[in-house]
Image (cartoon, rainbow, N blue to C red; front, side):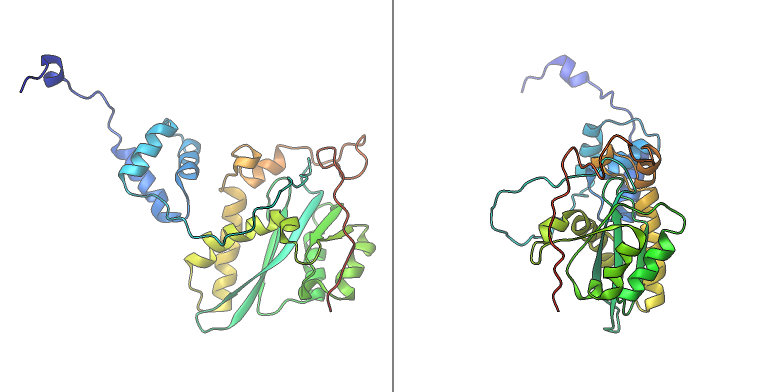
Length: 271
């Protein structure tokens, strides 16, 4: 067999990446549902000088490929992009996520997210949360921050009742209910709920309600302060809040969603 002399004497000049490899594996073991792009973004934020190709190569060599969970097939229909507010604190979406403790007891988690900055200002975990409790949560939340212009919610039993219907009028907030059976109109909070279940609920087995409250609140703080989002320029939600003006543009009429008004759907209650 003939072999070129230069090939025989070649020595790799690749730098030692053992430290990077160790740190990448540590992040992957700690954040089990983080894929390669998010791990790479975290390495860059920690000061590692590495390009995405090196990160992908090490990620693949370490066998850390994230197993994708099967998604339910849906009918292929035309999908229009939802309008997105340009300033934080002007439009919030609310919803509920249900889960069980190890004992089989059900509990609810009230979730709320800012459509612009992706901030999650509050997550409330209890065995039962009704409309009056939702109003108390909102009152407590907006004591230290400006009231929004719009709140988006679903036509669920938790939001049904005179208390939730009266709260927007008392505070000068527009209540926007999606059409029944149209969760795509609530896509922003549905996307967050999927991340919440994938990265928190599915990774923990809660023995008590108090344990669930502590773990979920810690995850919320990490989501706001550490987890980056590509839709806001690979920043954390808190960085997104502070990087944009907090006061509305006086020249914009109402809530301007990329120069498109928020689609109006009538408030429909299912009793």
